[in-house]
Image 1 (spheres, one colour):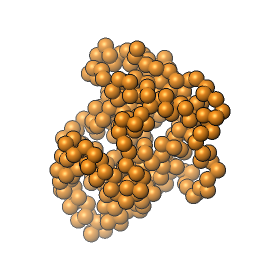
Image 2: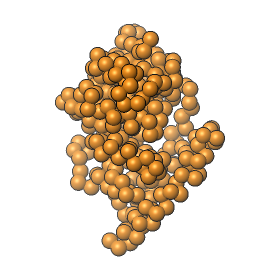
Image 3: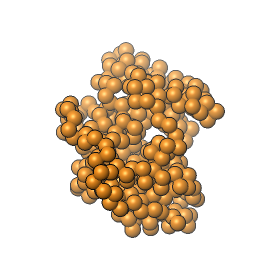
Image 4: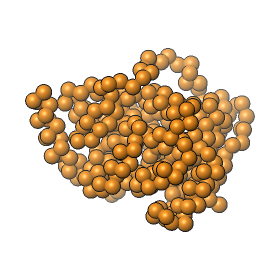
Length: 287
């Protein structure tokens, strides 16, 4: 079975299992894009936006029925751009590029850019807000990625608390080569579901390359590269405590949890960015 639908209503008690985030005190945030939002760090453009602003624009794009891409940058993606230049096709189509890295924001501050800790944006930073909106608005969410069975388990877990969000999942173990029969079947499945949001979680750079290859064939919806989002929801991977994210230590949590897979990413790979970093510092000193 290629996909699993989770549209059942699980009762008022399930919907009320999570606290209503709308009752919390909120900090005001901008309602429009600003001139200094788009910056260039380590040679690549990205946007200094808060998670609340990401949700604001996602909601507006969905209401307008517009196709839009929300991307993100961290040190890993910046290093991959140098080894996999085809990734530029994806970032070149992005309407919004989040900064998913506290160290990157700290470096931006060093460059005298208007970066703040609140500008760190990733799925784990806006997940609660997103699913609250999806539940309230009845959004249709298609998740493509993960091992067989993982996304279905995640959708079931989400559905227990957000029963009005309508989910369809498809695992990421398929032939992603452009023009393959698997791709044709998946595109047909997505078109039939007509999602408001398409989440692609197949790891970098596979997910970004898949989106770039098939963006024009996708229905009008908001498209995101979300990595292991549903692995976290299913409990397959453990997310770092958010206080570690706020301190810029999430990388350390992940490295300790999976050193064999992540040692090169977190210890070796960042050195590839030394040249662009030096250029940025020199430019900042001449301003």
